Length: 369
Image 1 (cartoon, helix red, strand yellow):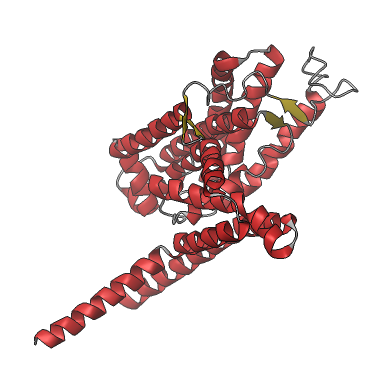
Image 2 (spheres, rainbow, N blue to C red; image 1 turned 30 degrees about the horizontal axis):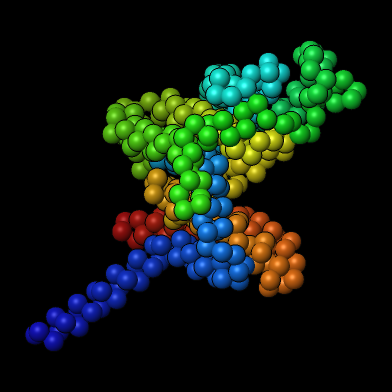
């Protein structure tokens, strides 16, 4: 009897280990890839840590902005691009008004937020018309908003919208320049509290803001609104029968995500110090989604821990892949191609797994019936 119990116990442990490995297969795979890339790159550990901290500082706020729509059953929010555009509108405003430092950042946030609310409301209304197809709709919304953004800042600036600053306008007097310097606010947020630890500068204040965002997310999930988000994520039809205003709750989730994305883009660009006027927002959705998915998140479930882990893994790979590509293939560009392949590949894999899980769940329900 004891022998049988021991065998059953071993089998149970084996299955639990296999289940855990299956559940965390994506983070584990990327952890192995990151370690291999770090070894092949021959970069010092201090450099890698410093670069990853810098990238965390830039990107983590944007990645966490994706969590609420996932919990609300709206999938991976590729329409986060619309929020990034709102943030850039705020930055263009302070460049035109010549407001620098922390006051400039606050002015950018204040100017961007109403646009983000408006954009988020519009996206939420459209996504309510395309329930079940939110992610592809979000991608198309990103393309559409990019076209409108370019129409305004490439054609309307200098014609319909007067611009008196010749340093930011194209030589013909119409349209903004391709790159705008953000010297007025560069690192103004990061430098509020900046502590060097073992030769690595830690932008403490920026990480405090990220921590406050994490606390805010946890607080929201404990409120009635947060419970409504969870109910929608579990089953939208049951939530509707339970009396939850489904469309309104989904719009609130999208507005919150879009506003947070606008703020995150401002944090990102003040660290970079340059605004690529027509391209800075284009990769935001794909890279933020890829980072979240690499952390172990799915189309229906995401946590703050997964966002942090995914951002660390994704940007560690970004940090080491050019040097690893150069050492391995003699061409740093190979590393660039590899990390772009990873960004798109992991999103595709996540969507395929989601579709497969839905199919398996539906088949299991049919068998029970």
